Image 1 (cartoon, rainbow, N blue to C red):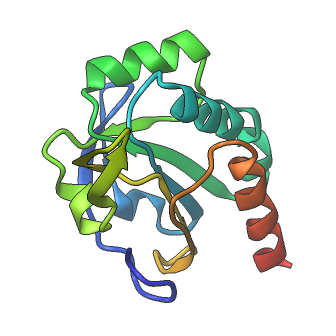
Image 2: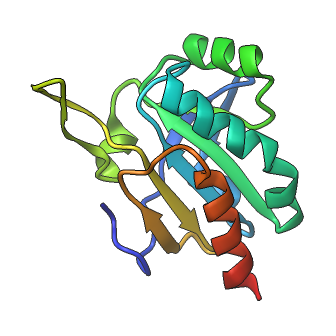
Image 3: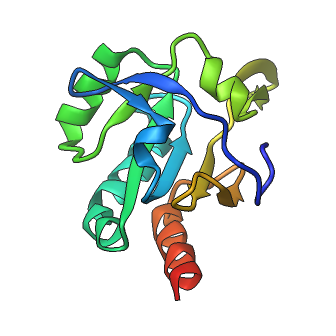
Length: 155
């Protein structure tokens, strides 16, 4: 993981809506970057739907939300459409950003070891500094926890 109180590395990734996203685009706003393993899987769907449900509350606090996974833009667009997700998803098919943010790690599932994205969320301030990191996130109620943390930081 990248440590709290350090500047997040800049990156550019293709985004849903046929756009290109750069971390510098979010300077001047708070930012939630959540890394998740795979579109349309149970945990990832719960997490994404919860961020989607709370999006207006994040926006009121001048905060943008982006989900990042190694899925293709086509997969992201399908996922976004299926659940009516109102924020953009970023496609990191070459694993550049998941490695930059150190969330590409060895995982275990049913006795098997493999490399994959460890569910991780970064909360950044308006200058791109990392305020808080959540690692090995449990999807349920996570978005609410991030929102509460942001509220307590802003106060």
